[in-house]
Length: 248
Ligand code: BV8
Ligand code: ZN
Image 1 (cartoon, rainbow, N blue to C red):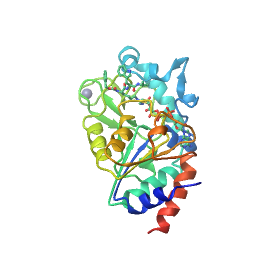
Image 2 (image 1 turned 120 degrees about the horizontal axis):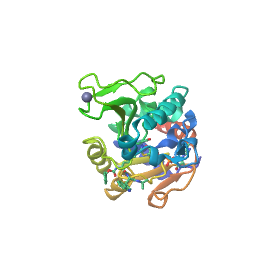
Image 3 (image 1 turned 60 degrees about the horizontal axis):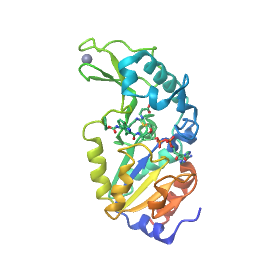
């Protein structure tokens, strides 16, 4: 892995580090990605941004639960990989460290990350469509469609941000404030196609952060980056961590 002297210097002197992750950081855990042709991309012939949409929750909540139930079943067999573990360790390696994730798979938390900003919610939580009360669900799969809300009897839906829906209140604001004030921003395992999350690396760069991409493929962000490390997160992050430890 060839890393520039500039990134090595940035790594050792950075005080405020911000990371944005996407589905690629969970790929080596066996979680299918969305646009890399992974099986998460299509459900019963529907492209995932059709099944994972506010419209489907309104029109066919049972189908949405079947799709999420299937994914929870896949996730129950997946474990965090070295990328998740190192990002959890980095929480205490810098003066300030912020992890923003687009993933709903919960693997950052399972790897030990204390407070990831989950801008698209979590597959392990359901939410009442009437009163918004949330209910944590166990790691295994759930009966096809969970019971009604215990407070008001309303329908429960996955507590994730579907296409056409607003992000959790304050999540994007907090993430962009961290992006604006960091020295070093990593964008790891995302095709950078989904907004507003894809704006965060651009915000960081516009405010002077050193922008590093970790991805085996090029993305629309690659040309904005100060450094683009082409490869798998689960292989590149351990290499970066060795450098960081060498400068401890
Ligand atoms: C919003 C949860 C304001 C659900 C997801 C019309 C109406 C409304 C909004 C829009 C509209 N048209 C466009 C929009 C905006 C829309 C959007 O951006 N659409 C895109 C597709 C054009 N955004 C929204 O709707 C957002 N809300 O804008 O609200 C609003 C509200 C109302 C009206 C107007 C405006 C909400 C977006 C959130 C959608 N929910 N997920 C679920 O998961 O089922 S998004 C979904 O995509 C996933 O959560 C995922 O996290 C996200 C991004 O995908 P990636 O993580 O990047 O994954 P991908 O497979 O694409 O890429 C993987 C990458 O990893 C690849 O680059 C690959 O090379 C790399 N990789 C592979 N292996 C590895 C690796 N990298 C490293 N290591 C490896 N080993
Ligand atoms: Zn309720």
